[in-house]
Structure formats: structure tokens, C-alpha cells
Length: 84
Image (cartoon, rainbow, N blue to C red; front, side, top):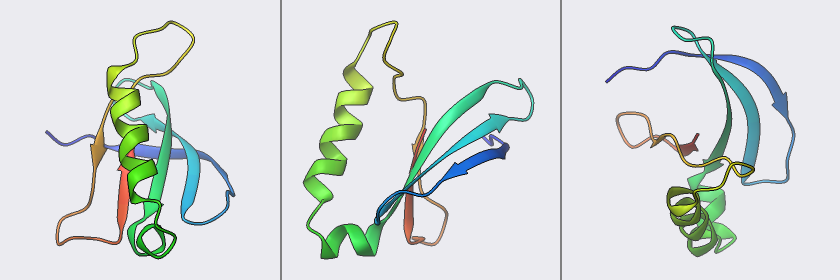
């Protein structure tokens, strides 16, 4: 499945995280997207925290908390993990 996203707005966060708003081009639905620099995550020993966050978002079912829609990385390994 190929999903095309357009960057709407970006926020600067402390490394290894970056957060931005993206819009799915086909449906015009807006999502929050967090991307994690995997190398910085390893250096800061934050892998367990990132994995726990993904699992929590996957399990949550509450109207006031956004759940996990997608998580992916680019082909060829890439240096970032994307969480939407």
C-alpha cells in the first residue's frame, strides 16, 4: 500500500524526535507524525521507550487519545522510523 503524505507544519523537538502534521493527499485527513532518528535513539538508549510508545499507541482505544495509524521506515534501512 502506498500512502502519499504532504507536510503541513513542523515542530522542533529535542533529538532524536521530530514531530509534524501531515495530510494524506487522497483523503485530506490530517495526522500527527513523529519521526525518530534511529542512530540518536541508540546513542541515548531510548529504544525501549520508543518501542513502549508504539505499543501503547497500538493498544489505546480512547476518543481523546490518538491511536497508531501507521509505522514505517524507508526502503534500504533508512535512518528514521516514522510513527503516524
